[in-house]
Length: 369
Image (cartoon, rainbow, N blue to C red):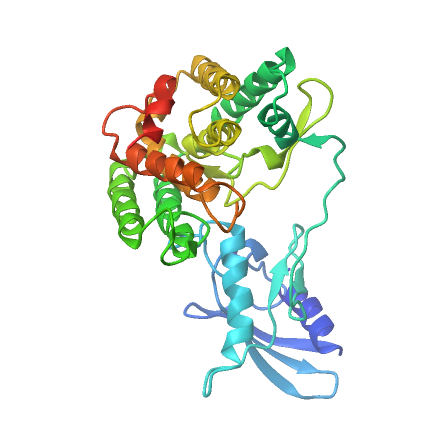
């Protein structure tokens, strides 16, 4: 019952027995009297504010308003979006003169209980320990002159096959797809956040070039935002540091990012940019080393054969720009040569200017200017 759940929560919060006098859904009038069927807590948990009047064990009458937020777009799509806003409101309301006070911030459990989170200052996550080695160690071995093995080819194919499998799970939510494309351009972890992180008066890129990358990215947002049928299950940060291999092709992925659903090109670009990047590092920025180009081609061939998603080649360009800005970044990769950085900037600009399908078979040409 709604009253009982609210009473239990308030007793834990205030540390005293209490009696609920009245629960009113704001704007709709008083709820049914005790003894009659009340609304389920789920309705309460999806954005309806409630006025609650109660009496403490000491006879003091208190009044509070309890509210939550709907996942109705405008950056509120994910549970984490709504949690972020509620946590921020709790700490910010009480710092502004004449603003109503926030008494607590909390969350609903799976069984409908209400729990307080107001003492939280930072959050953490606890995960299982995974045995194995990061996939990047394979790439480092090749970069340092190691021989391309059959296992290297099998692992690249296995990763592509894995993405094909998860990307086959689709979701019909046009607004969420548009949001994910908007995030690609404007999110602080994505294109605009990265361009802002580049130091002024850089040796390898000018402010005008960064501005041009941003403008081209906005054009791509408008090209992509109507392809909403492409929304699918994604990892969101599928790169060699987030894949742990054990024997052969047995692997586990880590650190899924930015939500459950997105564009398949995000995952494909995230992994494959690293074959190109490490291929450049191996040659000192001269060209893509053949062994890394072999893995790059294998990955794409497997993915496209399994999915049939050749439309991916029409939309991957701004995602490559995002991932290119990451690997070219002096913040994320401070110890790479200027020639390599310049080649990566060429790649970013060239793929953004590509009006036809991305030519993955001849990816080398995008690094020239």
